[in-house]
Figure 1: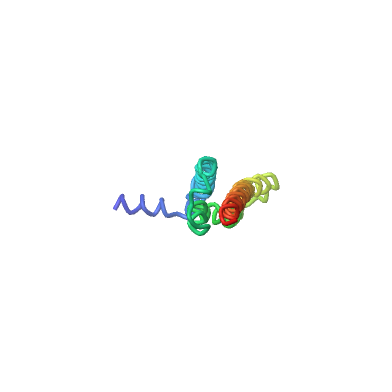
Figure 2: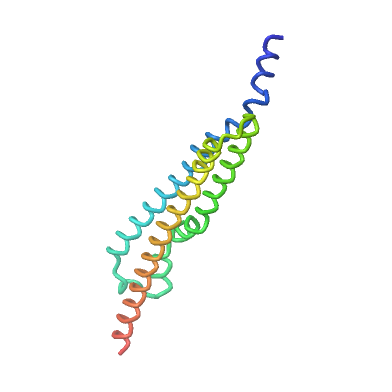
Length: 160
């Protein structure tokens, strides 16, 4: 029955939310970091692809649009959802702060402020990831517009 006391100790009321701190730091912040790397990688890949492409070589504008808009959905999705992922981390961090405050009988203002400040880091990181994603998306969209216009200009000259 020694194992039973070990399990009961592990499940005691003093530790059930400790996993949440790791989930916030490594889960939420790690996910946001991974998403930012993915967005920057896609942005660089698309940038070099756009530099190497010749719009005149496409037979139709639709074929050009299909080629140049690949993977932009990923960038747009990260831009739209990164703030919400960060907000989830903040909510979990605030829950953890209040839980730890409930375990400690004294209401130390310093502990509360530190806990809330650490909780808000997830939102800040989510906003940074979203801002970078939106900037990359807008830059890629502008280049797509330029390539499409170059195709239209080249094919107007050929028709005349």
